[in-house]
Length: 159
View 1 (cartoon, rainbow, N blue to C red):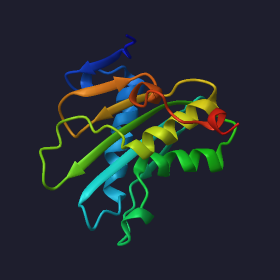
View 2: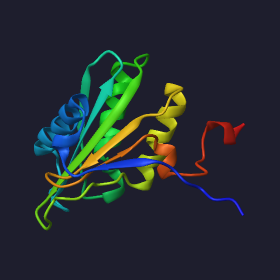
View 3: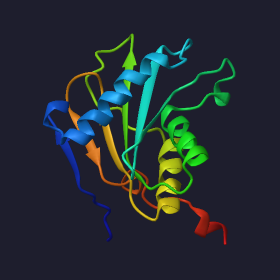
C-alpha cells in the first residue's frame, strides 16, 4: 500500500516566524481590511512574496451571485501573473478576520485556490511556500500547494 505524507511546520505564533515570513503574514493581515465580504463577513487577505522582494497583495471579493466572487489567494496571484509575469513567486501568506469567530487558527486555502496555487507552482517551476495564520495563535507553514492537493490535475493531464 502506498501512502502520501508531507512535512509542514507549525509555529506557536507569528513572532516565531523568520522575519521575511512574519512581514508577509503581517501584510496579509493588514490588507484584509479592504476585503469586500458583505455576505459572509469573512474577510481574507493574501500577500505574495516575489523573488525580487516585492510584495503583492489581494483580498477576497464577494458577489451576490456567489460563484462570481474571488478568493484572496487567487486575487493576489492574478495580480502577480498580470503585472509580473516573469518574476518568481517565493511564498504566499494568508490570513482572515471573521466576525463570528476567534480568528486564532490558520486558514487553509479552499480547493479552488489549492488548484490555482499548484498551477502557479508549475508555471514557477518551483514550489511556493504557504504561510497560514489567523490574527493570533498558531501559524502553519506548508512548503508546496501540491502537499495540500495530492494527485492534482494540471496542464500535463490535458496533453
